[in-house]
Length: 104
Image (cartoon, rainbow, N blue to C red; front, top):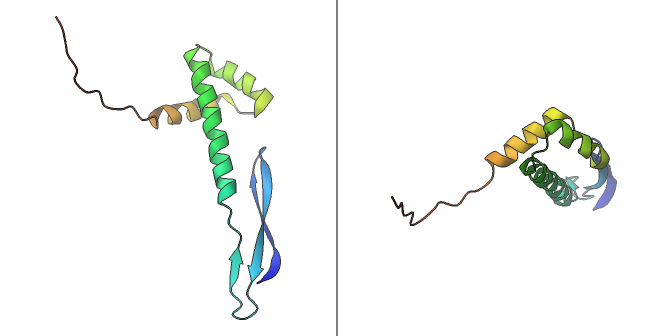
């Protein structure tokens, strides 16, 4: 395989990564390096932010306050924080309860 440049993948205000492209000299097929590390890194970063939002909301902080705090870490608007928090709550797995006894 011969090196044939790179593709740049970006996430606004988070960073960018250059993924190498290659071309086969025999069959002229194009291929690209694996970029799953970039997808995993973004997923882990945003799941961490969602956990921070949940902790701050449990402690009765407003979405505007959370957005102000997030300006220090990773700038997010109030609406973005609210949408991400709501999505994280909807995606939370709650195990079913078993053997519920009701006492009068």
